[in-house]
Image (cartoon, rainbow, N blue to C red; front, side):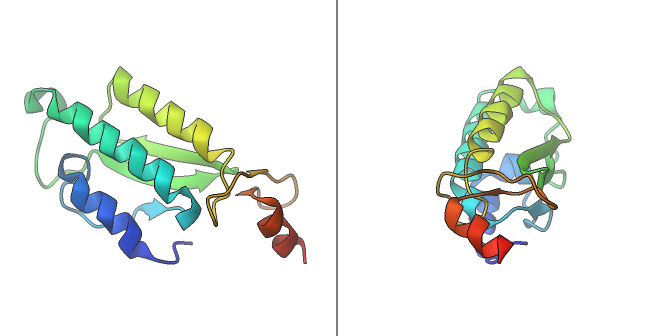
Length: 129
């Protein structure tokens, strides 16, 4: 699903607390959601830096993000640990992604046929051809 994993690796490098230095193999999203995901994870990383690492059990080999994927046209972000602030940030990103084309990042909406994806008009037309 990911055309260029190096874009998501940028996020992993920028957020060592969240990702524990691991690669982005568990991020199963298209590049159209790169911007909202980067905004989400940078905000979460900044929040974590304000907390005592004992709160979230900071082990450099353990990532806090378990999986990021598209499901039924929406963003799903599964965490190994989160607090209320992080949950609110995830909810905001989910709201952004459900109206953003997964492929190009332009405004989009979830489809209603077959595999549900959030796509713009251009990519919806390509999918139905």
